Amino acid sequence: MAGFEFGFFARWHMNDLLLSGRPEIGHGLSAGVLATVVQSILMMTKHAIGLMPQRDPIHMIAKRVGASTPSVGWITDFVIGLIWGVAFDEARATGRKPA
Image 1 (cartoon, rainbow, N blue to C red):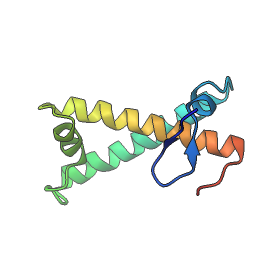
Image 2 (tube, rainbow, N blue to C red):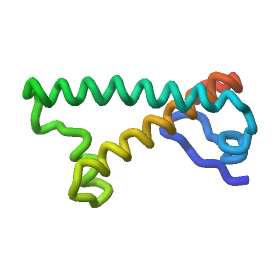
Image 3 (cartoon, rainbow, N blue to C red):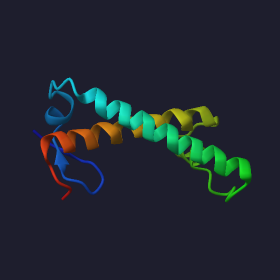
Image 4 (cartoon, helix red, strand yellow):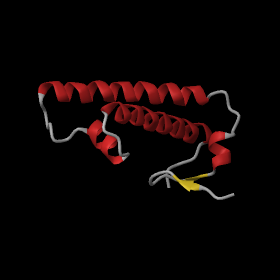
């Protein structure tokens, strides 16, 4: 089965990540949501105080996916956070180390 590469980390097989049948996958989802909420609060605070207005990750993401509204950027940001949370939880649970 062909694997996919997740950043610079070890190769994962879709079967290992998505079809593992472990009920603890919720831990990764909740960790991803919590980390993304904290990151979002920091980004909104940065925007409110006017720190580096040219660096707006939400608009950058929205522009990258071809959308004109920032809501697409926020949704994409949360999806990315969920993926990272599940991936790190899976790595922790299976004992895999970064490559």
